[in-house]
Image 1 (cartoon, rainbow, N blue to C red):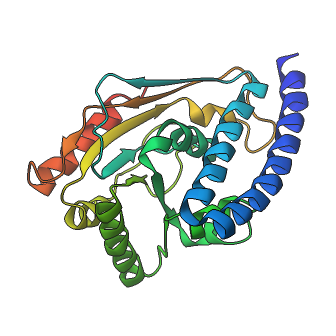
Image 2 (image 1 turned 45 degrees about the vertical axis):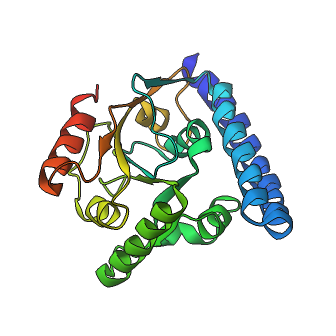
Image 3 (image 1 turned 90 degrees about the horizontal axis):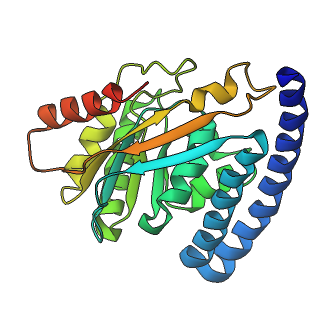
Length: 243
């Protein structure tokens, strides 16, 4: 019965998901061309809120745990494990007042309604994982961008999603570049739990009734310690909270 329900609800979810992507692609275009950054951000915030609550169609429950105050009016670098593409919208929605931008792979920059437009027009950075020079240059400019505007960078140092929830090795290059060129930033380790279960059976059907948590840990001033110690502390903090 549960598997039958998952097929039905997944079909409804994907139908609505596709429709909303098309609608918000148009709204993003209008927002960007009429209101520039501010207009585009309004459309993106509405999109991420809509896609986050759309997960409730599957019986998903989402909880953010933040025991520490998030620093205001400073750049933030959120470092998280990565379990599903469904990580993105809740993070964007919860952190919307901090203007979250993502470190993403180049391939996502075209061909996906709403998603590609947001990545190419909303201030995120697209890196070519096969071209280290391009990646490092892009990360340098991205770090300077969030430093100047006091925005937030979200980075998944595993580089790819964990399909079983077990964290992969963290790569230090992205965080190293961001802390170097956004020296006034605070680094916030974040642990995602159970989001991978949505894709337990692949892309279809999606699992129903999943309880997802996003836990934000204590912020760390980027220049408060040597990078090696900072990276080790961030990685251990994120991974030790994975269930």
